Length: 125
Ligand SMILES: [Zn+2]
Image 1 (tube, rainbow, N blue to C red):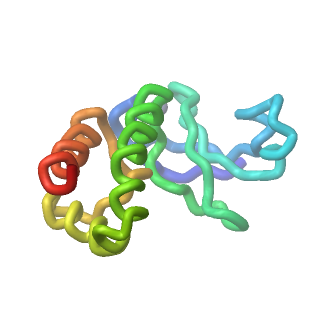
Image 2 (image 1 turned 180 degrees about the horizontal axis):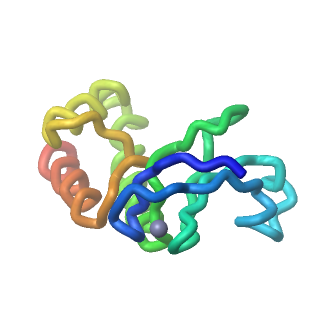
């Protein structure tokens, strides 16, 4: 078994995440069975990995937080896709606003997601 410390948004602390195959977290998704995921041993939430690696995509999110992140993408993506601003520049602006490097996959709470939404609505919508 492989373990690595990753922040778990469900437990609100770093946990010793275990490396598992897709078939353990998505038993009905044959297309995902060979992919790797890091799973929290306490609350069993998990995060995917960058393709071809075991590098986590971000912190471990709960189902609710994943929903909030999707809602954020629904606002965020059309802004840069419209060509109003380049994607890299938009992410940089959000990072400056937050005071740390922004990645949606690293957001840790609904409050953080809401803060980014508020910034986007104020500046772009
Ligand atoms: Zn957890």
